[in-house]
Length: 139
Image (cartoon, rainbow, N blue to C red):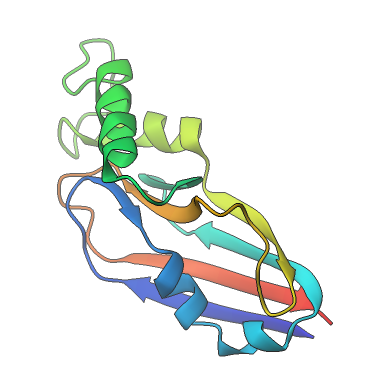
């Protein structure tokens, strides 16, 4: 079985957002997959994805704080600044975090750790809605 679906996420404030339920909810066919893979792509250059702690919101806040310190706004040596002071830092953060995840599927569910969840990392102040490309394949 091969399934490809687009999922449009509502605009979110900057930060790290747990989206596992959104992704799983967009793929009711996931329950029919005995063994397979789910590939998730965020189709943007200023947002990213990560698989990380899904229980404590402190982890998301700390990760976001670290990213802001590692790649601050208004960095004087950035030349791509026409779209605002958050744009080039957003591109760097997205490059560091990555734009896709490939996750195992077993017995109708994501086969990830108990405390792992899919997160959208919104790096722009006003990034707008985000489009995910979900590709599920398996038997």
